[in-house]
Image 1 (cartoon, rainbow, N blue to C red):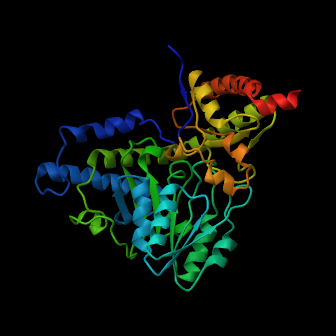
Image 2 (cartoon, one colour):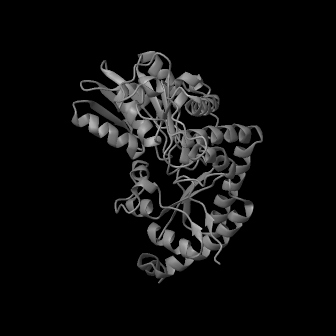
Image 3 (spheres, rainbow, N blue to C red):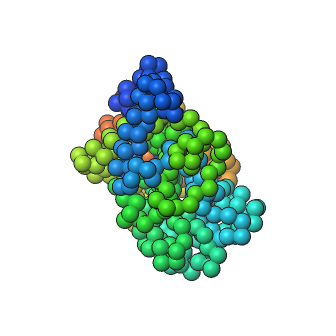
Length: 387
């Protein structure tokens, strides 16, 4: 049987065994509705509230400020649609996830103005551009904490300060930052922050939005008074319990220095590739990044062809955002950083998870250089240069 190594954890992560064990009872024997007042319901309610405490501890906030959602996309949409409105003005960046960009686009169509601030060649937003974009009717700033394609961390604390001084709401999409870097919502100074379970070894279909106490948030859904009337619908108890367990594991991991170990693994992978492959460069080099992500371009190859070729050898990587795979257009993130279209299309994202080992990195370092060499032999642009 072929050995398979998974280095596409920014797309989704495997559910950790401890997380699966924690959620298992809530599919069967502990099946109660958390809104029911009998024993079955109250047993589930207690588990949901324990998970809320766990997620709140991870983010440095009160449990009452956590709203459980179906994932990062819903959390982003709830924050943006819930804090901005027609006639108002939103500031976001050109490298946001489509959950933010498309939500802003929808509000633009409903009579909201949106400013998309640029990024530099390393993929970082300049806080001064955010300050310059402020208007008297600015209602919301939404800038991600870590980019999903490059892993580049944004200066969210400085942006939070600008938002506070201007009395404007600040939302940050922390889907790719949570459980990878320490998060403290008070240090960031945000009013809303989105996370997703399946990016931190919990299952798909659960996430959360931190909403600062006193923030007036319009709900997306109407129904029961769940989540303090901020998100109607019976709670996904197994998913919420799983998210709580994953948050507890993440905190334990920080205490053990897991983030530093992952950073060392990522650096070894990145340096190993650069040492063996010519005409390859790290996208976002020199900028602070989450510890698990390396995005490199390899001149004279097609990224999708490389993903397929590596998959045939047992290594799973990606060309960028999983949500836009199959898209013919080059990555909007890499283009915003000023990459040429051919280099954006020749970029590969390697993203590690808690389950990855030094042996997995060794495997990648064995197959990536030979795959690049083979694809370049077949590339017409590379062949011409060799003649």
